[in-house]
Image 1 (cartoon, each protein chain N blue to C red):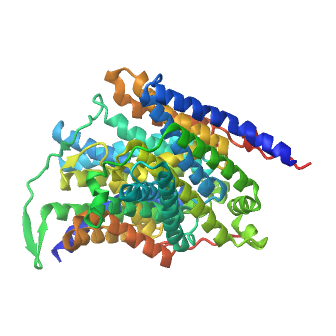
Image 2: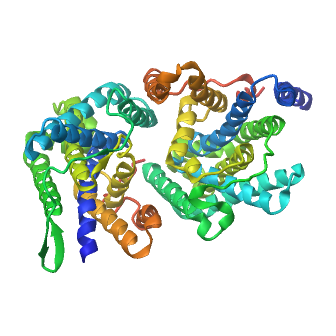
Length: 324
Length: 290
């Protein structure tokens, strides 16, 4: 692929994002569309970022993680605290806070990953699940060492900084980076570990280091998403980051298809809009059927397509191109 | 000492749930997230049997056992069996789906209802001092019932044809099938057996902590599962040991440290144990053949 082709491919990919960002900005500014739906759209973008993180961890590297929401929460609280300390309304500082939130989550992931990644398959899942519950307990008690965080009462008064352009642009950047990562030598190493760790090790890949790198990168994305989430809803509560939220992301990644970027993207949007759409579609007296229908739908989908909705198919931009 | 007895009380209930997780995992390598909700259904069956039908305690247990076992077999047939040859994660996701479905479906007004319901005590609680500790008749019932269940389980797994088939399937499913074991039947039986124990656990839990709602199975389920992993998943004595450790750590933390950290401590222990013994305390490491 020549440089010109590469740039044009990138441009073709970026165009819809730029258009979406601009359109979203206009819609948000002019309030043509219900602001509630604009918010849901942003949530879907944020969830995609977080889910892409888990896809790198589980889909590409094959590390079973049930504690993704904990890293999401770490990013959210870290970014929100920083923003409260010094940010005010500055967009530049918001970006820095997001980056710091992601870095925080990545750093904790490194600390946790160092010992925990020696475990394999389901045991790793349980250890991360345990870590998620420990973090939830810490968030619940956070006010005893940092009153700002509010503990079980929740953290309030976070500046509302997340906007449609931010979410769309960040999602676009993350998508391109994820694609490039997966196609690079690093990505190949990660996939080889998923396919057969022993063989990968035999082929000279330092499996432990690569697993750690994949885990840290994915958790960093979760932290990034968490920061955006905090500044979208301006309120954080420990229950937003409990085991069920980790399960949500896992469901999205598996529904989309493991190791499938397009699938994750579509499943994130589908999941979020399905959750909210049913709220509108169902008559009010049947609103409690929402969570009866969703799991039923989930079971049926899984029975019909165990390999995920997309399986191995990708949108054009994410597809591997044959070397010529 | 008193706290240790209290810890045994919850530990034994966890043990009853953990056994179901560990047996199912031992046979189909599935984390059966719906197990905690089968436990919940058991508790509700107990509630109705006591409140509406005024059945004697023994009949209540039988009914809860039958209901929970039937539910688990149906779940296995609908949600897990079609995916037996699919990637493992697919059945894990359906397990999560089944779990959510059971929680929210039973929370509908037309089914059990969304509120907390008080669980009627079928007998008055009295306590008596034994060797310097207060022991309530409730605790005595929990201890005795659990020990009976364990003895029965031991008998089934080690002394019957079905138990031998279970151990064979858990050892090597394909070979067991070739040797004429009806693998699907054995798996269904295992789901039923585990759920039966969870049903007993549900009734005991309801009697001991007399408030039930349809989400009550989530936390005990997670903790019992953790206990099973702690003890070495797939190992029956391991599940009991793990559950007792969980019960103790929880009660002792609540008593001597702070009840807000209660849920966290158990998982700290879990991670610490896993790092030292990656397959749990009594787990056998599975070496991967190349």
